[in-house]
Length: 442
Ligand SMILES: Nc1ncnc2c1ncn2[C@@H]1O[C@H](COP(=O)(O)OP(=O)(O)O)[C@@H](O)[C@H]1O
Ligand SMILES: N[C@@H](CC(=O)OP(=O)(O)O)C(=O)O
Image (cartoon, rainbow, N blue to C red):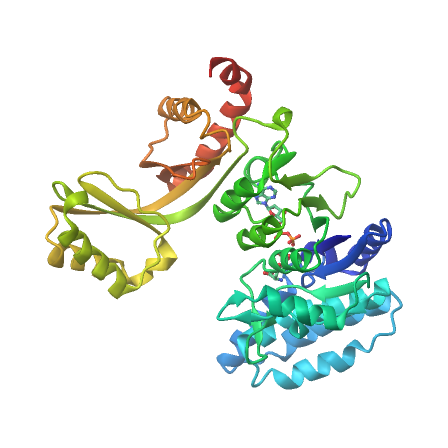
């Protein structure tokens, strides 16, 4: 059987609902459906999830949230009416409206998925199974055993179900919201719980592109990639698949297909354990994120000075900063974090490092982007890294740092924010132009 997740753009209005139905009914194996909340469409510039977040903000600042709520209600009633459904969505809308004054964030923001799934279940003639009945999180970790037991008691194997994505419940049966883009995680978890043969992730692009299509408009599609490569690309910012959604499918070796609801006839991307040798490219994908800061510290033979390092880490712990990377050398250490993770503590951290840790030098670099080149060939052919560095060296882009991780499938460059798009373009064009030459040279 297959689990199929449909993203926000795939369920944005009644026309998109019809496309979903055609896909689901096109294959009898699509038995478990996960939906996101109605997303953006030509007529609707804001996702329902973001409208719900806006309601919470308006409520908290004492402003009138009713127009926003009414707008959401109208969207769902329109989908119901345009599809000729009978489901009494007004009853659910009334309950939600009555709750807004005292609702917590997770409950309120999860209602988009809840309402969308109710309508989709009715439209498909499938059983609506609320995620709050079986998706259990303990201390933020998903409880696979308990959840599987619960799911078995609700839906018999082989039954056709629609589940709202993006949330589950905690030990106290309160709604637990996943990170943004979390319906991908719900779909992957459900595929795991049901031992699916395939996890289909239906979105608005025909697969994962080698580089963000908003930067490279005709970016080449990745036909196949490994779970590890997808994990790295998602972590580095490709929004098409949530990074935490890889593991549940990977654990049971369930292939993931990224497909396009608007063009179901087009091939997408397949995520597997091992790509077929013929499908392997030297570089699988390029991804990145803007707005990082780097704090670099140095001291003679720092890597051996545990006394100093422990002072440094005590300071980091005191400020409770989550760093993404910590490249190090004999005399130096760098701490790389997203600007938002250090926010207004940056100056205080620098002062503490300068005054309390007995270092020779503390340097801060701001407004940097990280660009990652991901390929499971990198480990086998380290010369690829050299070729890319060479190419960047010949361009006008200043490279602030290079990190090659021990995972060996990712090479990261730090560049100025203003060079971010240019770096991705340069790597993309060069890799594609010289791929044949590189193949021969390495
Ligand atoms: N490398 C990439 N390949 C494909 N899409 C990408 C990539 N990087 C970013 N994206 C963006 O991800 C979007 C799809 O993700 P998302 O908006 O979360 O879809 P959904 O609403 O279906 O879950 C695409 O429209 C595209 O703009
Ligand atoms: N609706 C949620 C969860 C989600 O997965 O959405 P989407 O599939 O549209 O990225 C969000 O916007 O974050």
